Length: 407
Image 1 (cartoon, one colour):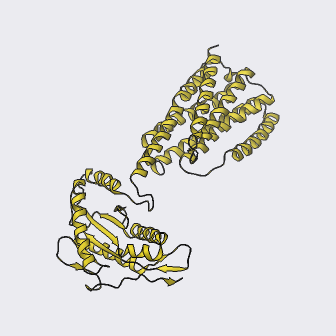
Image 2 (cartoon, helix red, strand yellow; image 1 turned 30 degrees about the horizontal axis):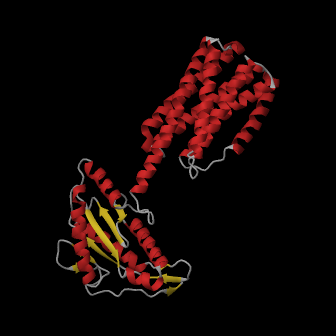
Image 3 (cartoon, rainbow, N blue to C red; image 1 turned 120 degrees about the vertical axis):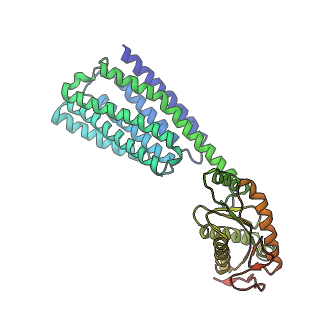
């Protein structure tokens, strides 16, 4: 009687959370984060336990075959849902249908060749292997694709590992004692149902927490980035600087302020679409030229920022020159035409600074240097702590290429 009550409560939990996951997935039309898969998983597991209640015990029937299929299909749906949560593109129904057909045939063969106890032992063994692989996958995720969810992933690994152990024990009990080990009111089955009921209470809210955290992180990322180039905006730069300088032994930073030369003329001559293409092209070059760990951002229409760490005056000058030369040498392909548009940039460099509070002053000093570089002829590098601009080639005003090439 107690076991029946536990299984009934377990079914109620699963069905309620299945409906909740489905409602949440409907509110996430672009990226459901696997919530629709989790809804299906809960529904499949609830259906399996409902069939178990109707059966009343181990039996050989169509209902029993379907029960075993649903019991294993549910964690597969959860597994596929977790893959969708982490951005993997997987298909649910094709995988479940193929598994259902294959496992249904396997049950028939085992039942006819080895008897009912072997079929139930196969179910426990398959569940053990499935949950073991899931546990290993979660542990692997802690070190790779889910480093930002360390605590949550460890929690899930422990819970899934517990199911794995219980199914392994069930397999051994069936091998030793036959089908008597599966009596619903046996001590082991009571422990199993209590654990599964606890799991059904804890896991769904934890999944909802993961979705809320991912949505919050996405919103924070959107708020910190420029929508056109996906570079950091001023807010994102400040937050990243705060994280960097809060670390121990943080080295001073240098700020590069870069402006596209004659950008208004580009817009007026070739149109705003060409201007947008130039901005995105320069952003890509900025992102690819700077070193890993440096910060890149866009703070105005044609103004870009790079913040360099772990370097000195000479190193930052070399980076700036590499960036300037890269923009000058690589033309922008104008969308909708076969033209290649050349452009250049002027770069102002601030003195090194310490702490996120130094960002605004570094921007002012780099802007002052940038203004001097513009006045001196553009397409050059200017340092804030000296009174003249420099270029790797010469100090004469460089010719600005605003004439398209035929592509």
